[in-house]
Length: 213
Image (cartoon, rainbow, N blue to C red; front, side, top):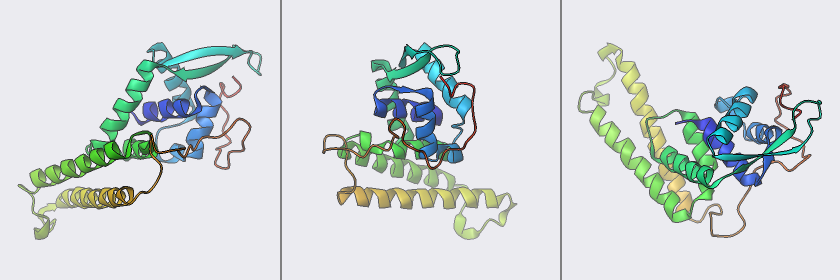
């Protein structure tokens, strides 16, 4: 599972149509360059690859400002829409994944209905609890990490991480049940993408060969 695919598909989807520099700006605006592999080269590569795979449609709209190939705007296709929601749902329930994938999924949570989001988050807790149950058949946290020498500290770390994840997820469920945020079908959603020409306060300042396209 790839966080960059979910992030790029989601950014393009929220814009309707977007060129690579806009997508890069959005991901930096969300701080994704700090907590994921959303670096400029990865973003442009993902856009091109997903266009080849039919998940995005590439529109050539104008000559490059640098005099190179035409500027390209991307639009999500029906296949891309299906892939976006599949990745989003899988990322919300899967516990055995990297934090960047969970973070990307939470960022697009409101693209779902409130009922489905709650159902997926409850399934996440169920999977965490099942994982914890399986692990503690062989390792008892209360006995302390000493029972396995310093290797026990690894198990201790994972169990504490799982417990924290479950507690955070339950807190999110409680907030959503109380009516927090605007979900699909409930009204005008919050859209955290930059408009054309809007200054990005979190821009890295790094240039990439395709930034001028």
